[in-house]
Amino acid sequence: MRVAGLLVARTLEVVSAAVAEGVTTIELDRLAEAHIRDHGGRPSFPEVPGYRHTLCTSVNEQVVHGIPGERVLRAGDLLSIDCGAIVAGWHGDAAVTVIVGGPEAARPEDLALSRATEDSLYAGIAALQVGKRLYAVGEAVEASIEASGERLGRDLGIVEDYVGHTIGTEMHQDPQIFNYAVRTRGPMVRSGYTGAIEPMVTWGSPDTDVLADGWTVVTADGSRAAHWEHTVAVRDEGLWVLTAVDGGAARLAALGARFAPLS
Ligand code: MG
Ligand code: MG
Image (tube, rainbow, N blue to C red; front, side, top):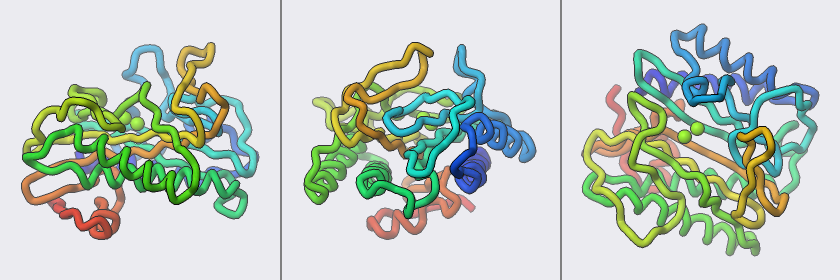
């Protein structure tokens, strides 16, 4: 899974570097597919019935599942890029949010939203621990988003209509991983567990709609949304963020969580 995860990480690096004003989302999709196939993998999203692209590209008020197409990116657009790959039967799944034109082109609230979402992802990852309950992830994500919201003086919306998932020989496996606190504590995490944590956060209401294309999820109130995701392995020795180039070493250290790669 590290091989698949690293390929997803590198693909997201390549795609993110190609994001610029005037580029279309289908161009990014072709770039991602070529990179995955050139490095011994195959895109996993086409295994989802009815979907045929390598990426989901969700712009501004689009939350997730945006379909790559002829849309031309504009400076200041808030773009989330979700990518999945399979290598030797094992899956990696990750998403990043970037701003077209870079931070200098960004609206300050978009930078803050993206940062808060990524912070909540790592808060959720750090809550993964052998012997603890899986739904501690959602409690940590929610607490992180609430803290960011207080700092920003803004109620951020955690999308509840879509959640993270267990991953391995298939992309979407049970149990799901909520991005918010729920009444139950969930299954016990055991050594060797692998999950994809993926908070989706809005600058307004958490409510969403699906566009007529049957895929694209948008915020009901038109506010912008960010999405960050990593595939993570949990062992007795600690955590390994399989879709981070550094395995999550830097972010985990900053959170006091144990980093435990196998290689
Ligand atoms: Mg994903
Ligand atoms: Mg996922």
